[in-house]
Length: 227
Image (cartoon, rainbow, N blue to C red; front, top):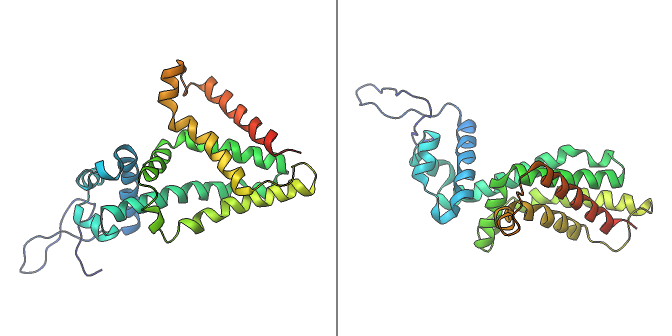
């Protein structure tokens, strides 16, 4: 690293015969992870246009210079935040061990996980919504987004194939379509939480409502797939 960047730790160092200057970070991985964490929240709340690098720098006790050093630009940080959000959900999905479960149980676990993940990660849902407003133009520049999402479809393909072999699932279904249906049902519960709740006078975040919605969605998906 040829460029001197400011450390997230307090304090400065001196060079002989020169004034004080910023020190280098001792933990670049931790610094970038912290920046991404704050950036995800900032972009999900305000979108790309409304988010401010100054505010992200202040929240992370870094500097605009450091953020640009690691991510290149505001748009580069936004894309990195998107990729990180997808990476997290796919990484957690890989720990579900769906291949170790019977087909119906595996599909149920996947639906329940997706519902719980979206409910517990509103920033993820908001970021995806923001990028759809941008017509996906920034995600289209990603070099990793396709590879990140391949395992999600592969997992559904495997459990669906096992269900077909056991005569449990009906033939002719598309794993991507199954994935889209699960995502749509779980996504709506977060993306439309406030408008739907206001219109129908129902607290969509109440535990009993969430439990009922999750059971309903699981039932809908299983009924759709079963023979």
